[in-house]
Length: 444
Ligand code: SDX
Image (cartoon, rainbow, N blue to C red; front, top):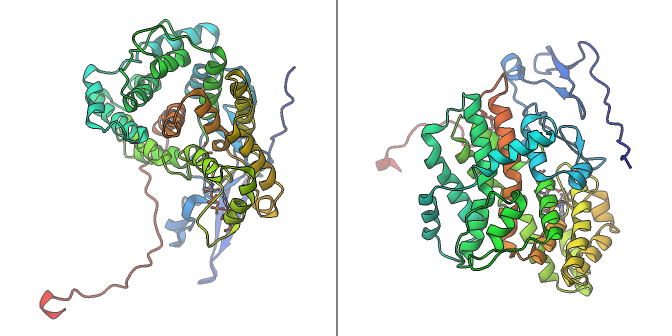
């Protein structure tokens, strides 16, 4: 049955709609144009503000700032809606293969069967890494955080393709996107195998994207790896749900790095670094660590109390979001995925999942969380599912990076191809020492 689509039409700005700024310093008035998009808030165009008024806007953390046009993803935070190129995340998670979503983000439309086949063939023929590349891993201790390994090795890709990447060339840009989408599962699986002292497996082109990844991550050379279709579907859904998410911290990092026309592989490595933080993609690992620290349902009130205490740095990780002021639609889907995977693996009574469900129930019944519109986000349930599948907590951020690579590189490509592309260079409010004369050393 087709899902009813919510009405997202917005009132477009009237012709010539503007905001008038009155400067009290001189009483002058300045008209700032108002622009509208397909969905979402109208924007006040302040691009001429400094040139005309000498004033800067001030918005640390970009709470109220749109820093680009993008056609890839739309989030309605109040209503908990997430679209990729107009398609609802619920539909894509339920019906789309991850490579379909990659194609959609890169080319702007869902592929036909033959287009998807051709795309899969191209990706399948870029999934190996240079033989020399394998030696980068040996420089890391086996117990190095796999996310540190990902930052280092993905950054190293720029050394292998530096002379071949002319980002002004359409074909070169598309090859770079294909290479990154194709090689990330291989690199992510290598980081996991290396951390366990297991040998690396080469990808196989008779397997699809997700089965290939699962085999490289969990397989051993001495026997055939049998893909569990329930786990394959769960990982496919995990990748679809994490693919792209507007201008989040790591995507903004990739865009800013790319705006200087840096090597796209190095830009994605910068994105991995930004994603690693526990307030961003590192939250999935922090959630499981938090649940293990809470340990039992009777200790939940203590941690809820700590989360509400401003003098206590503890936060209920996996809760809250800059944009979603409603339930993160991805969290709801991942909660269902948890049920499915735990059931398949005979872990229906997984204590951590029971604890998470109870924590969510209590928190969403507490004024502190309700008033601040703090709901579970994408990271709240994902780790429980990944751990049940066999990944350690340290592999959760790398898996997020694997999924988000398509978002990062599609946003990078959109930024490079934008007609008015400039280097990103925010200004600041200077709060340092007033100008003063140099004092010679002998006089200090
Ligand atoms: C991701 O941007 C994206 O799209 C990111 C992401 C993606 O797909 O790319 O969706 C992935 O990063 C999800 C978020 C994962 N991070 C966490 O789960 C970490 C815990 N969450 C918080 O750190 C926080 O909610 C953020 C960082 C996610 C958002 O922070 P904001 O928007 O800057 O909000 P804030 O910190 O100003 O919080 C507003 C209020 C504050 O209280 P008051 O000062 O008003 O009294 O809510 C409180 C905060 O103290 N608060 C929390 C809380 N999150 C916010 N209190 C307790 N527990 C929390 N988790």
